[in-house]
Image 1 (cartoon, rainbow, N blue to C red):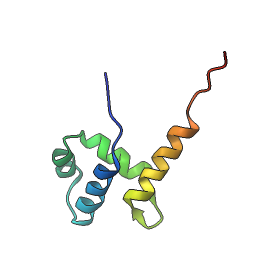
Image 2: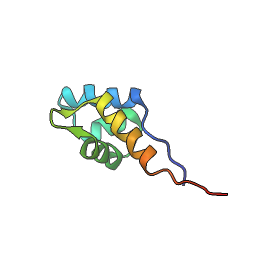
Image 3: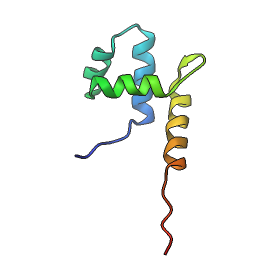
Image 4: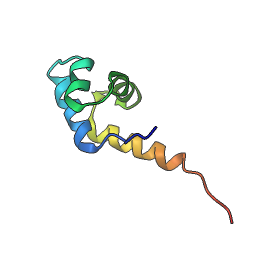
Length: 73
């Protein structure tokens, strides 16, 4: 099963729609993503001030970089 990471643009859409008090299900339909993807994004990448798109993108990139495996040949 293939998947794609959320883009910075999608994170800004989540930020805007969440700020407009839309539900997770509505946001998922707009972005053509699973509601669990949106819920997970909001839970994993929130800051003390709530969900911020740029901060969320930085946290996600940091997690990907920290979990990268090194192949020794």
